[in-house]
Length: 447
Ligand code: NAD
Image (cartoon, rainbow, N blue to C red; front, side):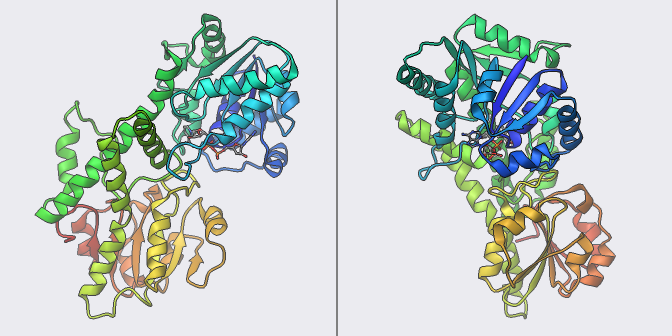
């Protein structure tokens, strides 16, 4: 089938590439000319495992094209995807300006019946707004084309996006008319062979499903962070508690890891946006408010542990210290630093007069873009280099390569022999046996 996708970010680029991979003819449109030019030269703007070779192969095969020319893309597509950003507005609700701009562009250029598919994460009722925006432009042109607006929220995980897209758990399709559903079924047929993953529903339910999924996952994380904070005070070890509850199939092992708080481009903004939607409809979302508040607190927790350690010692506190920071991305296998816990931590360290030597396997260029040149920040080429001359180590992102370091080498490199672990990667007995003081999240003795 012929597909046009607006937005070549994490969602649009991965979706477009996977659709091309199974044989569809995809044109990706973006307003960012540099991004489009780069993609046409084979420069992939994001780090996502497996993406680069797939983009290059499908581009070379002529099934995947990149353009800034919206009109030609609209003329090409039987299905028109909207996959642009929906960042938080000032009050936390989703800002629909990019989504509605695409809708108006479609209305200005569409030249026949169309299926417009909203893949961006958008509040309930957005399909109606997209429909109205397209209709307005059609009216202004004095034409009347039949079109559907379908909700097809995206559930891919950054860091695993290609695999998620090629083998989705479920494909949610919210539509009103059967013809639109069958077109979507035809589009997704190659991903839907061994069992039916398509969940059909009405448009509003599909829009809410995406928020419900992310809010549930964020709730699990905040819940576990709450338990970690209790564990820390009562002298229990949250890692043992985690094993104790995860074995209950009603609870399960996923998303019950305590840590330095959730970040990324989705959970923080989606929890907030759902809360704002609830309020707009007269419901105070007490649980969502608490999930957000716990997460905000948790993002400052690593620094609290650091501060407590240094205030307790004979040193003069955190000022003047140099911290090796392992991990900047909001989670492993991505270069995305949107709402990353590292951002809060680094700011707190700098505000307290400390210096940072940071290493991240993929996010350095993004961190350079965000923080610019600073005297109190040095980027390092590897984890060992970040330790050289540092007083303490802080682990912020659980990249695999940080999981079993040589504790002897860490001890030899650090001046203050102390490790702060925001992701509970190590066994306290192992690291303490190497002569290092160890602070983690919710592990009793950190208090
Ligand atoms: P992104 O910020 O990485 O990319 C958005 C892209 O859209 C940018 O390249 C931007 O230049 C482009 N754009 C903006 N206006 C445009 C226009 N008028 N025409 C064409 N392109 C335009 O965003 P993302 O992370 O891919 O997220 C997109 C949507 O998908 C958001 O609603 C997000 O919540 C949702 N989502 C994201 C993820 C994720 O893991 N990132 C997962 C599921 C859903």
